[in-house]
Every structure is written in C-alpha cells, then in structure tokens.
Length: 218
Image 1 (spheres, helix red, strand yellow):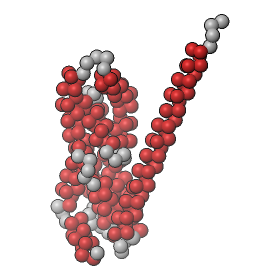
Image 2 (tube, helix red, strand yellow; image 1 turned 135 degrees about the vertical axis):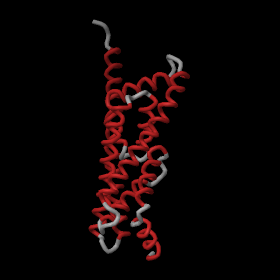
Image 3 (cartoon, one colour; image 1 turned 180 degrees about the horizontal axis):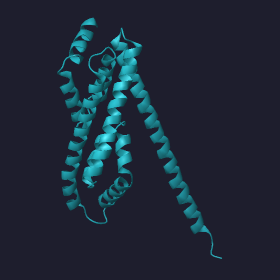
C-alpha cells in the first residue's frame, strides 16, 4: 500500500499531472468511461498539502471539460445533419427528433448544466444539442458554467477529504469519492421522483379524459 501511495504521490505532484488532468477531463466529454471526476477529486485531496495547486486543478479540469463538451457537440452536429436527411415525416424517429429539438430550445442550458453531474448524461446531452442544431454561442456559455462548477465541485470535495485526513491521503480520496457518490445518488433520486410524478400526471390526465368521453350527452 505504501508503494502504491508513493507512486500516486509522485504522479499527482509532477508538473506533467496538469496536462494529464486536462486531457482526461477533455476525453471524458466525448468518451465517458474515463474517470475524470475521480482524478479531479484525487488532485483536490493532494492539493490540501500544497501540491498540486488547487486553483490550477480547478482551471485545468474546467478547461478540459469545456473542450471535451465541444468535441461531443461537434460530433452531434455532424451526425445530426445526416440524421435529419434520413428522417421521414410521420415516423417515430421524426417525432422524437422534433421533441428533442423543442426540449433543447426551451431548457437546453439547464439540462446541460445538470447533466454534467449525471454519469454519462453529459455526453448524451451535448451530442443531442449538436444534433438538433442548438446555437453554438449559447452552448458555449452554458458549457462554461457547467465546466467551472464541475471543476470546483470535484476539486473542493477532494480538498475537504484531504484536510480531514492530511496524514492519510487514501482516506481523503475515499471520503471525497463517497461525497461525490452521495451527491450523485441524491440527483438520481430526485430525477426518479420527478419521472414518477410526471408519469402519474400523464396517467391521471388520460383517466380524466377517458371519464369525460364516457359521460353521456345531455
């Protein structure tokens, strides 16, 4: 264990770590199996002892996430053009694409910021925003908000763990990851409750409609 901690300590305190952090955060934007959040939290834990620099961790994590989101957006933009040309009016895919376009036009910015904290969700949202032709200027604004808030969130979670367990960074990483998982669980729970409520409202509306149609005239 001491040997592993020594390797991690050497890697995280190396000047090259900043470049790795940027690259991992960027790749995670369009290839969401890279553990960028864990890396940011780990960096925050070690930043509690002075190296790496906490501000640099936040900035480079945010810049990487911002760049990765734009790669994902551009992939969706290119694929969306071919998708639109292949859709036939009246089909389910055409209706689904129309719904996605309306949803993104109405609350795409909020969806982008929230999806940054949902595992795999950010890639789905950024690709969809590109595919439906969401305006790039506004995408960049909301992507910046999402990236900066995410960088702060991950680095500060790790920093809290690092301060609490200054002499045992492994425990600090565990605490930081535990806090991140707790936040994710809360977000997912809120989304689940929201879906259940919306589904219940749809069922109730259908039942009311059926009751109205069943009433005799006069």
